[in-house]
Length: 171
Image (tube, rainbow, N blue to C red; front, top):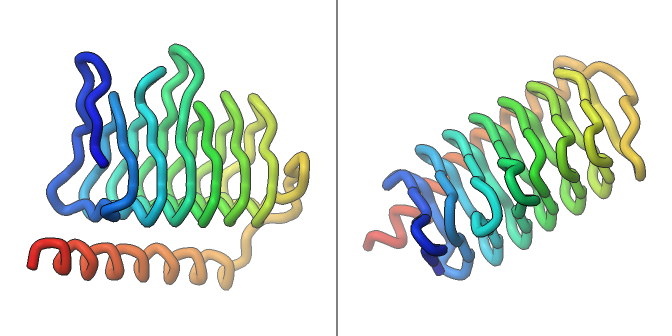
């Protein structure tokens, strides 16, 4: 379901795939070829949420904000299953592993990888191109070429799947 909130209505690019049971409300912008999967909740009723191009937000994830703190997800990011994002910044090509929680003011650097089940506390900065995981998340090591290729494969597969499901919605 897509809901306005007061004067704000979600702005969703026509090429984005939105699963029929996803919920998007308020001041939310979703870019080209992004995919919002089953049972995702994106609330823009407290502050803006900005989602770039070719971003995939997987099943059961929840995106929200604190007052006056935008949630930003840049192009080509992957948000795994059952992730909670709250007023954070997710830079281009980053991957957030399933079940992770990223809290207010945290910034995940370009191309960084947050391991499954991690908790990134408020204000924590994960440097570009690094693997971090744990509760609380700690930087473990720079990503390998194999890591980066795997992240690219996942991104590409989700763009393809999203466009396939978008086609099915239109038939």
